[in-house]
Length: 403
Image (cartoon, helix red, strand yellow):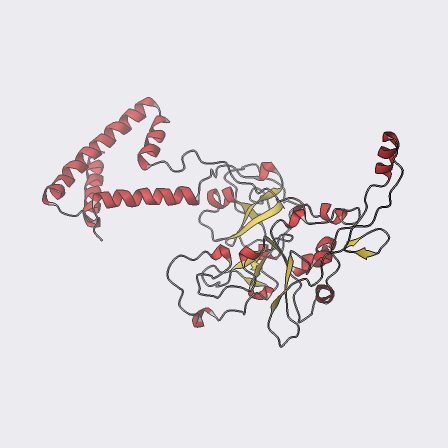
């Protein structure tokens, strides 16, 4: 394929820009010394062991290995420098004992979702959703948001143009939008985790905690919407939708008023009443009316009741109270620089004599290249791949003779 010199230079600039956007960070430090933290984790298929490596080790140590990205995992420490993996770590060269605090779920065996299928990016057609609690990944069809798609061989042709897979509306494989779109919720919690967390079990199917259900096995799936207004349950145990009437009292002195305020601090539980449909489904893991997954809508962390009864469940699952930070490697100062700028930066790091020799060699190559390309410019000819290859072949021959 032929191209003008300007087109070639533009293509190189575009490649540099894409590389800086895809890998804007430094990957020269293993995260093992940072201890356990929430970070992107990779599974090395070539090493074939249920262990995880950090993003830096995935690039610096396992470059030529087949890998699967597991995305962020909380409280995880990189396994690359440990004896659990036979491949040596090039970034943390002190051998370490195997990590005992890491949790290795089924993702570390290369399988995902409640269906236990392996993930193949070349054939997977569905968008997958990560559970906020266990951080496993689930197919939308396994969450009853859509019908299970046809096999790859029977799949219709993908639509043209850019489609945002992350939006979970219509994948690049031409699937229709799911019943609950990504824009409809903020976070997803799988049924197994909902059953383990009292707060989620209490709120399932209420306002802001969507569920996919059906009224009978033969009927279509629908979104469970609460039909009752939230009520406040006071210590007396009497539900009411109105504020209690407070009788008038004789005015107290400031000190007495402060003491009474402290003694009568409100203890009302503000959690909504249980949704009977949701509770029926969650009580039976084999129910055909729904899996029990919950889709939490925007600002769900602000809606929890924090009374003495509800707060311990939230504190035991801190991700329900506060969005977690995910570690990212430091920014790469060389990211986004042009080839010329990268060359000059590398040149400045060389000893003076070697730098001068490098400048002389570059100037000689530049003069030869200008001389070689001048006839093309004079005649208006396009420089092809073979022309460029011929120039560098000749340059290598000259270098070999000089040695």
